[in-house]
Image 1 (cartoon, rainbow, N blue to C red):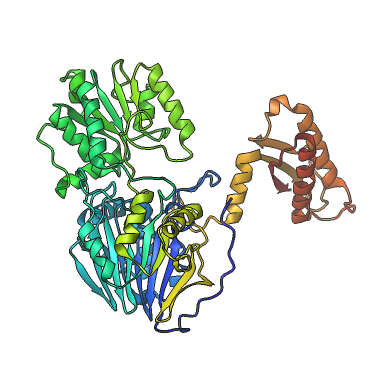
Image 2: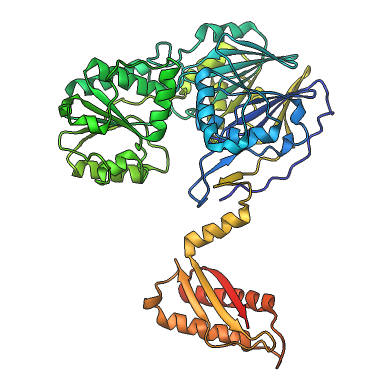
Length: 570
């Protein structure tokens, strides 16, 4: 269901002028919509500005972005927006929010800023961004905030952790991370710089919780590389590898292996081609001339020399893999001896569509390999042992689990307690809940700022309310019945029989008796209690039809369709 409205106690920024506040606007009750504020006196630093993909009960919604109501009137206090990496759950709200925040400067690595700039081309009306490139050796002075960075390994190059120096100590934000000292085609974890934080008065560690439920260490990219190489070595026909377009580290590995084993590469999927183009231009990826070809060139090569690298590993209806499986692809189809590799884990909720895709690929004669059969996918987030190590290395006074559902944050907290971290110094917060620090210590306050969903639907931003969403849910669940009645304006009499239209409720040809009885009841509703020669009261009639016909149809079907009365006055 949509987020329940929260009761907000208006924060008083003057209560303690020397306090440092951390205010999460998203990312602490879900995976996505990451955005956090660090506030000191009248200065604000923003970390990340991401989107959240819609839930199953949000029909028609494209995505959800953070609520920035708290920042209204404070736009001039914003000293900068720092982006940890280029995934949409960290950058996706930028086109919508930056113009409303006075266009503060956006900081990120060259790759992150290039991906942001490419996305901005789809939102030309939002104007030009002011950006500034940084790397793990950069130092910034943003008002009263001194900011440094450290490299982290994730599944996209150019990922950074952030160190914000405040008068009360350093605040460390890990961004999305895993500890991988020898990554392949990715950013190495800057372990030396992280270890130096141990004795640098770290006030608070804000640490990724996405994989807090998973024991052990995350697979290294070198382990994945070895297993992937076995597939390249033994595959007899074409290789078709499906992955996320944003997994640029993995994509680089695959392209490197293709070159090593003398395979040409077809990139299929707009976002994948775009990301590879950006990474190549910036030097994150290198390919020999002739490595990338088109489908038109494919017939010049034997099948054992062809690799199709594409999107659609989540079973999306119109993505490349599904079109291949369903014989709907414009240029090719699945052939016997094809080996299809799913180099990504299944996003929760996609299990059924992925299983259908796998079954269809097998029916077409392909061999299918996924992460359950072989370790061919390493997640981009630290597991339990790496989370413990991060806490030990940084040695903060306070721990703030971030980036995950509430249960993930609680699991992260339990891990910290298991290695001796004080429970009272762990803040498991909700979105909008203010954390406040001063010379006496820190506390998780009861003050909250607005964080209700702001939903993006086409060109509309925030114009789809919970009422609209509820209507859509009702339409999706039980359909709609339209009742059209023509009524004389002066007398209120019905003219002819009302029309009944069903959409998603019943099959009308098979339900004639129910339709006729509904017509009869509509006529009775309009006729009863009507004074002779009384004028038409359209609102009263509509409400009565809606209530009475809704109750009648429920009594007959135990379904609650939306009743839409249409009155035509004549």
